Length: 278
Image (cartoon, rainbow, N blue to C red; front, side, top):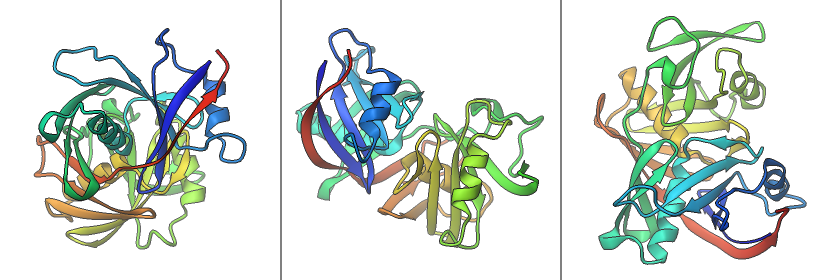
């Protein structure tokens, strides 16, 4: 089976975006893993499959597959790239569009200077929404990781996030703690792990170890999760610049019960086609 794809990225968080085949079935997990390989395949963090709309008033229904081939619920930078691609196809009337995903509806807005904003919904701190195995909801949770106790915030952005506040992201043990927390038994569906350094009330630095992918150059939902946790702790303002390895994202969140917006660039790297197993 041949698929035509567009290779895109948001600050280095990279994707292939392709239309669903006529059958509607995605490539197998093994095929996605082969394509994701950066030496023998195309190379990407996630594969984004576009399907016909399922609800009136939406432009598309999209599905997300991590580099390990497993399907996940949401991807902030991926949503921004899809919105940019649909706008290029003339499907963003007035620069606005609504997209559908496994995590629900996503509003998107095409901004000047190549920026795209997406409404990532209301951050959900209910542990059951991640899910996270804990008796009661709290601002901070102790977590035993390989005999050491760390403190995390936990929030769902349509997908699960654990956020650690660190003194320096440059010195953070991302390679050691990231995979250990991702697969921790208290997160039965695994979790994305963010390491947040608070510079001031309007500025953080962030590294994210993504579930099923590893550390990426940027993570949109991870940026939203970090700001949501930081604001819940009273340490951040409504508008925050998030510096990641690939550049800067802007997160805007008025506060509890309100929707959080993610803004950043979305770019096309190249287009191509590839044969995969049917």
